Image (tube, rainbow, N blue to C red; front, side):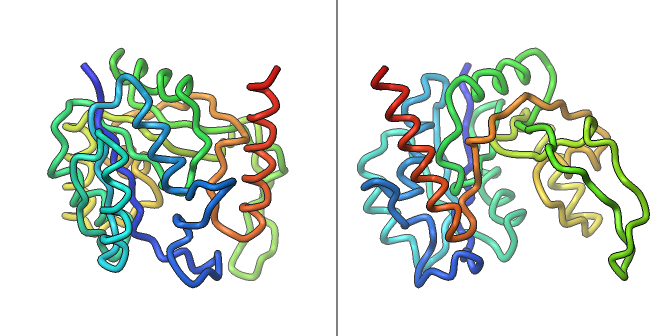
Length: 229
């Protein structure tokens, strides 16, 4: 039994200040999107990849599609990420589904394996890393109201892994109640289902701003050095 992965790639990436979708920016000769797709194309348990895309990017992504045997469908992206994933969910064939940000090109197979095994064992899960900074709660005037215990704070990443049944119900519930979540796990939590953390890594960054491109280049350089040892 394998899994399906939904890759929402319909964002506009305003913070990147680029003339086109940031996913086509290259890191050492390959676009961000290609690097992300390669991860799942080469993962043995991944059966299918479904990508949510903007209309203006369909032609470019269709050209990429020939390189990948596991891309089964492109679906039209929605106004919000939540709408894009909901559209894609309707076409999933597997009982296990992961959702992964297209702009996270450095997740590794070991982390995906741990997420997959967690769901197989009955526990929905997401990747996350412990907060290193002190976290403050503030009011509307930016006055600090409390300091949170960072030992219980995680920065959440993707992939996030669920059964199709649970994730679909969470999305149905969210839309019926007018809830717009910040990630898939938040919607599953809203429906009363527990979600666990699988330890991620600091290198599984989401490329959002120009400085992230520089960081991504450094990560790739370090990956090459490790492979050469």
